[in-house]
Length: 255
Image 1 (cartoon, one colour):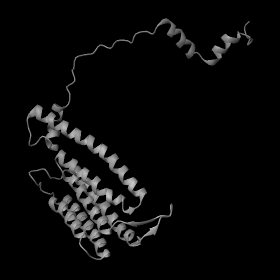
Image 2 (image 1 turned 180 degrees about the horizontal axis):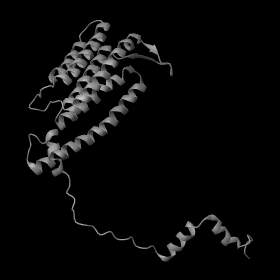
Image 3 (image 1 turned 120 degrees about the vertical axis):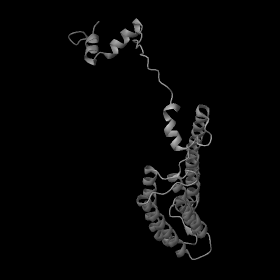
């Protein structure tokens, strides 16, 4: 069942590139979204068996994320049918700056949506740290053509900003993945299962830095210099007290 959840949107994405009428391509998106939602709900009734030596499996958290993602994608697919139907196929004028622009091919839009669903499914069912990273990176790459659907300079600018911001986070996540891998190797020498979620959860107490249990003596901070003490005492006094010192007790300035 897990492989079906992954392969159905991937195969449908390649089918979307085939020549055909645009309405058929849109309803293909709805059909795949409905099928994926049905398979996701079926995992609550019949638990899915692990695949690829346990690298693909559904735990309770992954099942919840998968179900929510699939349900949201089904609603998006229903909206996309009307959205693409209202889009103008030929050149049209921008409502802000007045220049002419066109849309990207509808096949690219539908195929990237389906690949996005497959990538999110991979993130939900992955039990391997590296595979999870690949799935998150794939969602970034397939989302970029969706942002650049309207081909003008503002959407192109938004696409590059999106890629650069996401790439920074993905690079940091990759660095963390590498560090966790080498930490696991040095401590336990387990190369095959070094990045499995189950292995990391089991060995997390040993990977964390050890905290010494001996009592610590808390020392008081050193006192400030004499001149600084006088300055602080003047600053901390209320304004009326400082004014009385300047003007005397009767409110008249001193001579």
